[in-house]
Each structure stands twice: as C-alpha cells, then as structure tokens.
Image 1 (tube, rainbow, N blue to C red):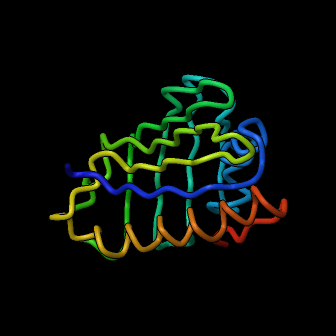
Image 2: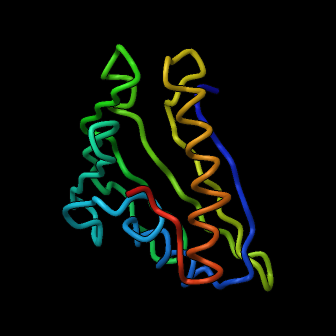
Length: 144
C-alpha cells in the first residue's frame, strides 16, 4: 500500500472525537481559511512559507468518518509540488466500548515521495500529539 497510516485510542466519545478532528485550527494549524463543516466545503492550510494545502471535504459522516481531497499543495522542501495533489486524508472513528479509536490515513502518500519521511513524521506528531491533546484536554498544539 502506498499510504501513510496510524491510529490511536482516546477515552472520549465518537462525537467528541469527530468534533475535535473538524477543529483543524485547534490541532493542525492556526492559519486555516475557509470552512470544513459540510461535504463540498474547501479550506486552505498554511504554515508560513513552508507548506500550503487546499483541501475539499469529500466525506463527512458524523461521529464515524472525515475525508478530505487535496486539491493543491506546495512545500518549500520538495522539488515535485504535485506529490500531495489528488491524495486523500482520512479519519475513521470507531467506538470501542468506553474508548474511541481513530484510524488516520493519508491515502496516496507514497513512501517513494520526497516528502514521505518529513510528512509521515509530521502526521505522526500531529495524530499522537496535537490531535490527541485536543481530544483529551481541549487544547491542541497546532502549527503557527
């Protein structure tokens, strides 16, 4: 498979997890413009002049799943600026009794890509750090 995947478990309900995932300013980056409340919404994410992405919400199943399609992407640290274009970022939310599992995938983030090591490390840090903190404490550590 040419995807990056990881998962984690939280004590919060699927509803709380879903709400946190959709608070992209609270865990991914403070410089997010646009909406991600419904299918078809588009938003941009930016970290200074290092990384820019434009995404479209393509799947939104309350308390179960969120999927974004990457429409445009630029990263200062790679030569091929199309590596993310057309890839999908997916969150599956699964109730496990008193816990909720989050299965994250960046579908199409190929290990052969120049950005794979940096991007997979960043996703790992965001999923196991910032998003987990936002879910469990109400306060993430988004990029500025």
